[in-house]
Length: 296
Image (cartoon, rainbow, N blue to C red; front, top):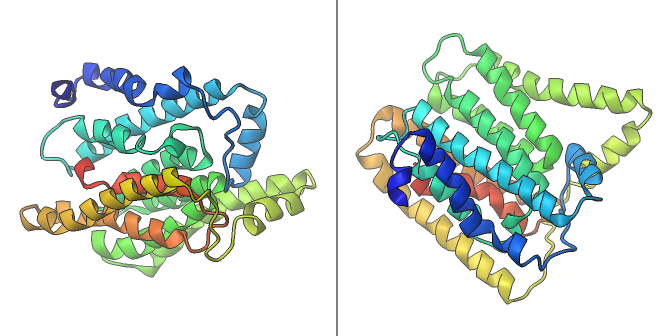
């Protein structure tokens, strides 16, 4: 099967669907978590879940597979577009599917899973600023997509730090460009805030999006064997990422080093976001799947 992923042809992308069924099909064949519900929902995540809650769990799990499939194809496209890969292959997308299905909590539709789609778009737009003199549109779009992601999963807003400090790596840092970036975040929040104010629900928006999602070192979860096994798996992958950094930096071009540095910065910012996200559980670790070294 790996030979299918060592190609850029459409057949390789379609094979993701078969691969998805192999690694995630258990949620349909053995639906043991019929009462599963997401946590840490931003305002759009909360409203989306209200719409989906009456639906059976298998429909929501099927939607999760659609998002995962789109992200796998998108990751292969972004890495190829920005010349991070030496070869034009789909293998990073296949590896992403594997890591993104590594622990049971990743198998269901969650606000973070939806937000990750927009984070991927934001990373694509941000990397496009490399050595481009006029990049205002890319910077605004980066902030906009990060802001939209945070409306589904609040702590995604921490990736604004990635964009601000990462600018100094991809290009000469300018205060004007930071303002353009932040304006993208501001615009999406302004639009959503005005909507809730217009329908006389601004207190609902403020409480459910901000107050219920901000707490210092707030952790939630069942301390059982499955929890420790899941933490062990993700810790092993995290160590592989960290130890692989030096090898990646030795033989690659400057462009590769700068752009792969952006992905590593996503890792550190994601770990930082654990500190202020309320009710953090194992599902929060999903955001780390972007930075597995094999994706690059």
